[in-house]
Image (cartoon, rainbow, N blue to C red; front, side):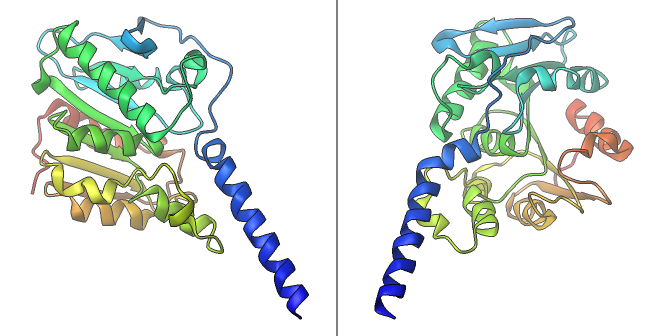
Length: 263
C-alpha cells in the first residue's frame, strides 16, 4: 500500500510539474502566423516593438482601445472598427508580445501584456494627440484582464468587458479542480481584486451559455465594480456575443457616451 501511495504521489507531483511548466502555453495559445488586416488602418510599431492597429476617430470622437482574446490576434479584431464607428469612435487594437505579427517581440506574460498596453496607450496620447478623456477601454475574454488593469491605473473614461473572468485563478481552479492551481499560477489577471479601483462606468456583457467562463464570473465582477452594469445575453456562448443584436444595441451608445450606464 505504501508503494502504491508513493507512486500516486509521484505521478501527481509530475502532473503538477507539467502543468506548471506548460501553463503559459495553455493560457497564451498565441497565433504564430501573423495576418495583416485589410482596410483603412495604420499598422504601427511603437517604442519597445509594440504593434498597434489604428484607425483615427472623426473630429472630437472617442477612441476604443481594444484587447483581444487569448487565441486571437489584432487582425481578427479589425472588423470591430466598423462596429465602433457607429458610435463615432476610432479604433486601436494593441497586440500582445509573441502573438501574430508581434511573434518576435518577446514572450507573452501578464506583465508583458500590461507593458504593451501602457506603451500603446502612451503612444495614442503623446504621439497621436488623443485626449485621455476620449479613451474607452474594451476587452474580450483574456483581454478583459488587460482592460481592467489599465482602468485600475486610471486609463479610460468608460470600460467595456465581454465575457470577463473574476481571475485566471478562478478559471483555472474550475478547469483543473484536482490541482493546486492557485499555488502553481504565474499570471493571475485578478480583475476582481482590481475592481474597487475602477471608478468609471463599466458595461459587462456575458453569454448565459458561455462554456469557458461561466456567466457568474461576469455577474460577480460587475457587482464589485463601483459603477458596473451587467447584462446577460440569453443563449450566447463564449465566442459569439457579437452575433447578438442586443450586444451592438448596448455597446454603441455606451461607447458614444450618450447614455449613462453608471448606477
